[in-house]
Image (cartoon, rainbow, N blue to C red; front, side):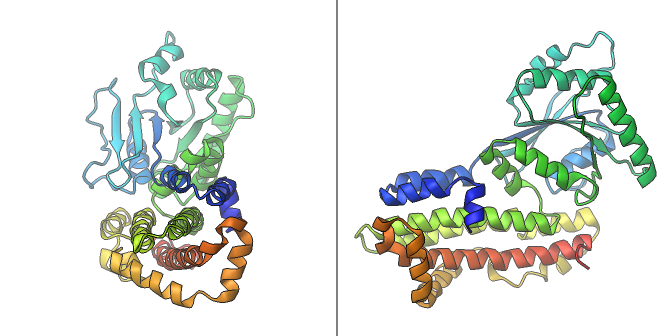
Length: 379
């Protein structure tokens, strides 16, 4: 848990808030983690590979409502926005291709499509980056924006050998254009768990402001066990904030307030976890369509009740059990980790922590089973 909190820079903030019994600061920290906007621009020719990439980033297939289509229905110079109905604060922007005209001005392109408003810009191609795309990269970097990347999208006809040749050629182009320490990430648009995407994601999350990196992680579809682990850790940090809120409310002598807050906050966190881990019915149906599987087989893998439906009654039941099961030894360990003035509320804190962390672990186990069936990872 300490690693989780350190990774999100919450521990000191929460400890100070608990010390001062400042419930509003704890609530604000939790809201920042639950609601944070992430806007990503995808630049490149509007071929099937780019459409598939945009869809995969949203957990969709081309047949799903609201998916990116190939050929695109957008006008050549038109920007298209692809929101995510399950994660309204996560939006992908399909920017028009960069012109090959020698008179092309990168500065004008950036100004026209307001490139600086995006949290990250991904320049895609299927062969090698153009000179003008490098000019756009250079112009964006000159404006002190680090989160701009080159991504080589694999096509259906590509083999491991052709991709190696394309990547080598792309790196040569970037070096010739004076790009220092050039990086090109290979991505399989229809199967993000393959090739370089997970490495690319780690790099991008490291470059983004922390709260944006957190928002991106939770909004992405869950297509690998490493993502399941990272999402579990992120939600456990949220649980710590919720448990701190629970402890703070428990210190206020108003009957039933603490239990109502615990259940309501718990439902909110676990509902977001269910959707983020792609365990809800709609996500599993979309995943089944995307990978050509029977949705009933994926749904049958869910053994945790909260993976199927997050209900207040189930959350209350888990909180009640945790309250009864919380041992003296566990409470004592939590007391030692908490500020001195907050130790009187450690029982409520411990119960909330135990109940929701166990729920996150149970849901995570279901998500790992789905990943195994879909990708074969770990088999």
